[in-house]
Image 1 (cartoon, one colour):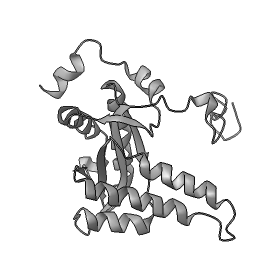
Image 2 (tube, rainbow, N blue to C red; image 1 turned 180 degrees about the vertical axis):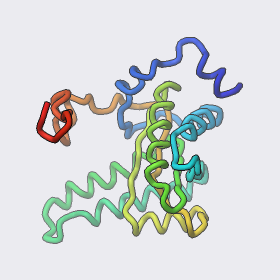
Image 3 (tube, rainbow, N blue to C red; image 1 turned 90 degrees about the vertical axis):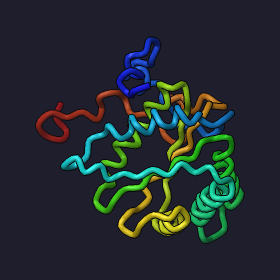
Image 4 (cartoon, helix red, strand yellow; image 1 turned 45 degrees about the vertical axis):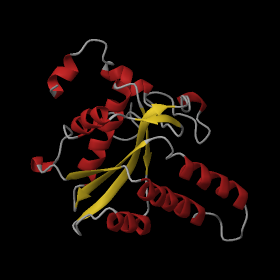
Length: 203
């Protein structure tokens, strides 16, 4: 089935509805199917890129030992962010463990970009996240610092002129995700409080 015919199917989620429904999912019941992943990734590649250079590459990681290493690197990264004075170690241990465990039962998609193509690659990831919603799936974007990105680049055999953008977990949601107005990390800014006309501070 072609990409265009998929878009024309009845009962597909409206774009604005997909934007509203998208949440970061950390608990999954089961992975996406191969067909779903192909449609989602194809949607990602419709993102704009400078001079149409399409700087992205994708690795679907199915080998459980590789998934464990990638999840372990996220645990390692988060745990290293704990204060040097040893305070809140239990909190960071819990957070790091939850991030590692969030890979369970999901499809794991590593998105890479050619040097200089990181912005286009992030636009691609946004398309993927919204397409997942249209498929009735959830997703979570996993960001890594340079030290861990180098390890994942090597682990998955990427050429030297490519870098990891992010790793996505995609699958059937096992939770609803945080409601925007109840997100524990930060309250949402009032709508249009971020909009200015002509100059910052003018509305």
